[in-house]
Image (cartoon, rainbow, N blue to C red; front, side, top):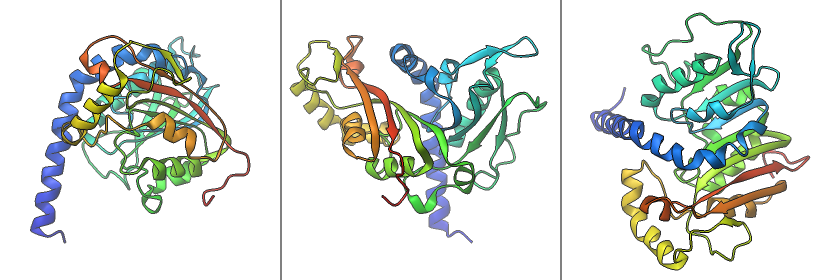
Length: 285
């Protein structure tokens, strides 16, 4: 039985989740307007048995491979996407997440072991031709605490993150867990905001000309506060570089952009790309 202190802690965390999800209703649209031009360069390549980490409302599902299905609707292509699992820790995201999944032709179900909530319902009238889509509550912060529903579905052909590596407790641990869940030769697709890269960095393909040293320091200064406002987000994390340096990949291909849009873009440049798991790498390596 939970102690009074634990009950209070859980309640406060639930309020925090609700506040962030409410803010994200507005912020996610603005964010997507900035980054979709880059996301759609790689999302159409996603295929097979798929896991997405921290999808939020999953508005990016529209960039997966789509086709006109047998009933005449234009939905995710079942010949390309075989199954889709999402690992989302914030249950206040689930209603819009489910709506976006169903709008793209997925058959949605919930993992009741990780999220026994009674309010969320599976897709009302599932079609056997619809691609299965499972919502699981959790993270990849701890290899010993990965939800059973995710482990049971592994190995995955494709794993995706959008602005998720910034919030994990330890990105190296999360990436090792991603590698452990990918099949050999499977692909990790990512788009993440990062610390200002040096404009001379060969990965930079779009440069706004601002002072990278100054704005990198700004990111360092604001990160302690931003972590609270942004649900754990580290705006100064070098996620693209961390992916490239961790090892265990057969190939890594990513690009960095410093777009000129607004003030927020100066503290949130992007890295996006993919990494292919090395053949023969297992979870312990």
